Each structure stands twice: as structure tokens, then as C-alpha cells.
Length: 317
Image (cartoon, rainbow, N blue to C red; front, side, top):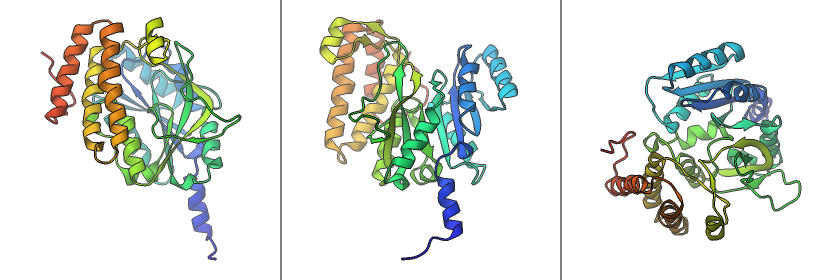
């Protein structure tokens, strides 16, 4: 059996996540005034924080500049809204440009609040996982702000890690070497399904996706309102009420991904089609506000998906 060299051992150590080799990437777009508190909670757990702003208001930019000055945060200020995927790619490549300093980057939404042990939970999940050299993403379990619903319900007591198929973008620790192998997040998706598409592509290349079942953060999902009927139909106590533009990107990107995956994974494609066009459409028609406008945007999305139109910004007039 061959002996591992000191150089190889040092290389392996660098690949394992630790505070000193993690760069956090926070994407902002008109963030609220609580952002400094949330960024401070991030900066305590990683080596470096970079904020990528998608053309926020002047008041928000003043706040971002103060955060940068107070906490040593690096700012990337875009002159237009380039979308979540492009902003994440910008932040990832900022970390990559440091050479071997960073082996991982942590992706976060502007409204995510980290608990003090969040990053350590992700590190523990990686270290405890027996196939950790294949792990491309480690996600954090979280509690939803409005409903207190927990994303991942662990089946085992004191479970440190679990393998999953997909993870939401916020709270994900991504391996830089594997990111280089898999490629960038898809710029043409702009927002929505960016995380799903990346996880699918990652697993297609033989990498794995795991989650830390321990609660690591609080994170909002949509604009909720309670509904007993919705809870009866879909086992969810609250209805999300996202704006029409989100329904457009959900539908367009979802249908695009379903078409691309149909021959590779029929079961996933059919399940996603049900969720996208049946469950979500029923939700809009029965429970959400601005029904006509949302159906209009969904119709545009179906049309664009069928014609493979994936411009970042669409004219809805």
C-alpha cells in the first residue's frame, strides 16, 4: 500500500472545510436595514465575506459601504440587476482568484440569519460523512421565519449528516475544486431553479449532496398567509404569495429543466411537472392574490420555455 506524501496530506487538509478556507458570498438587492446584523453573524464564522449587490438604491449602497468599512467586507457593485446566478458566480470567482487560500464558498441570501454554530455544523457534517471526498455541497437545515417550519426533518436522533438530492442556495457550502469541475451556476436562469439545476448537474458528474440536520439558520420563504384549506390539500399551513415575476421564472426555468432531464430522469421530471403546473397553478387560482396577472406571467413562461427563450430580462407588455 502506497504511503501518502506530506504534500498530498497538506492538500487534503486544505480541501476539508474550516473557518480559514471559507469565503462567504452574500447576494443583495435592496436589502433591509437589518443586513449589518446578519453580515456580522456571518463574518464571525468564515475567513472572508464578499457582498455582490445587484443595483440597489443609493441608501442601500451607503449601508453596504458602511458594512464594508466596519467589517472588512469586499463589495462587488453591479450597475444593473444581473440575477442571483450571475451574482453567485461573481462571488465564487472572487474566492477562486485567491488561489489556494479558499477551498469552499458559502452562499447566502440577504435575509438569512445564521445561528452561531451554523458553519461548524456544516464542517461536522463533512467530517462525519464517510464519502466526504465526493461531497460537492453541504447544506444547512433551517427554520422558516413566518411559520417556524423546519426544512429537513431528521429520521435519526443526533444525526450529523444526511444525503439529499437538492438544496436551496442559501446556507450551502460549496467545494471550489468541484465547482471548477461542474461549472458555473446557470446565468440564463437569472433566479429560481438555479440551485436545483446545479445539484442535478453535480450529481450527474458523480458528486454528492449532503445536509446538516442541525438547525443552523432562520430563512424566509415568500409572503405567507394562513389557509386551512391549503393545509388540508397540501399539508402546508401557509400559502406563499410571491410576486408575478417569480412565477414567470419558476415556470420558465422549471419547464426548461424538465425538458432537459426528461430522458435522463423520467420520475424526477414528472414529479416536478406536477409540482410546477398543477399544484402551483391550483395554489395561484385558489389562494393567491393578483391571480390574473400571475396566470399571465405563467403563460408567458410556458411560451418562452417552449421556444427556448431564456433572456435574463423579459418585456411583459
